[in-house]
Length: 128
Image (cartoon, rainbow, N blue to C red):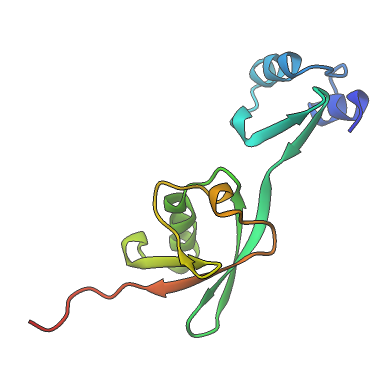
């Protein structure tokens, strides 16, 4: 992305040519998106690391979620709760055959756009 395109991205201001300028302008114009969600390359381009993933249940239902690479597993579960009404405590997420642990990010699991996460419900209780 050229400096001019980045300038247009940031509300039509003058072109931004460095990471420092981007951070300054972001605070100045009130962008509330956390700067750490952006990866800077060559100090003149910004790539937003959001992606669309599918969450598939055991019944075969698929739900699409827009997540950030920096989203914690807890946040992904909250997004599932917002769409499906399933409390996070009852959710178990599986990616690439491994259960996803809370405290880790989507990036740590190498989740990319189009990935499929499998949702398994954790049932409470049992026989005594």
